[in-house]
Image (tube, rainbow, N blue to C red):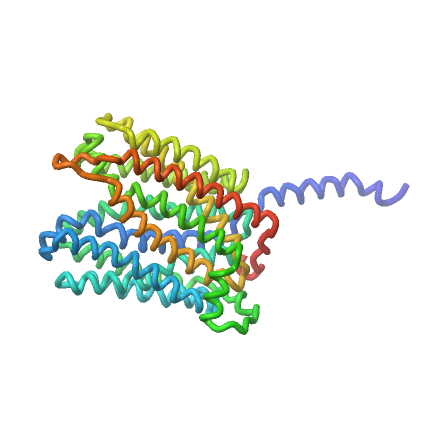
Length: 435
């Protein structure tokens, strides 16, 4: 009897054990989990710094004797400076270690936050917001480049799902804490809190994050300016940038008037708004990772398409509401944010597959800049559509909803084209060293 037949049962048992081991192999290594956590926490500080100004508006208008237009400039200065810096940084984004790039811009961001914390007047605060935007606006693009370098395409949906929960966490944890500090210790204190926490995050990154520099092994003779122009004019890059413009247009049009619409049209009270945003934030944190996992399982574009249909339906209903009970507003708001989260998480993961390794930093920087500027333009356009009556009620909000729905349709068409390119040109797996 051949020896192979004698040992066959034992080999079969061994194969079963090997299969069981493979099944138990975790999706993410310990280092990858650290990268996900630190990038999510880092995004939390960036988003909180941007969002905390809105609830501080009443205090700032009084303390610094600001006109509403001046406060508007304080808010928009961050977005426009972030957009400009994204374009300026794009040419250099792939010429340095990603970790060094991240720490350079994060240090500048923390410096800008400290300047906000010590601002004695309007012009100093405006300058501080410009500094914060110049550095903070690039951090998101560097983070996305790191995700692309470290994680396989098959799991990037899950990664984006976890990292994107930073927005919801800032709503639930950051804003209430910031407001409590502002009421007890003055409006400067939330910025001190963000700066202090950010320094701890920076130390952890310096100590534990490995260098991310494999893209530097791909030699390029292009200058920074040539690299910028090449990234801007590459055909499949342009599709991605067009998709980002449409996504930002749909997302930023409704946001500026959300609170006013809830109070004056839906007849909610100011005391009910924290509950509305808090419950929505909790559901966003729960659903974010689940949506990311779904996008990896059924496909990024399919998840985006489902999210688009949900968002279109909810926008159509929400923007046509009159006085509505709180429980129904919360239900519709949660469904709307589930749709929006499905679009943002899946599209972000899909976008990471567009650029080649040597172009990732530049592509992400330009994409982030376009998103910032498009969001600012969308907010201005929304202000031209919506009209507020003397009683505070918003008119033409349903018209704004139609514009948003149309932008979602065009965004879906553009993302379908992006998905076609990605399927025909699958991205290379990340280097083993950082994976």
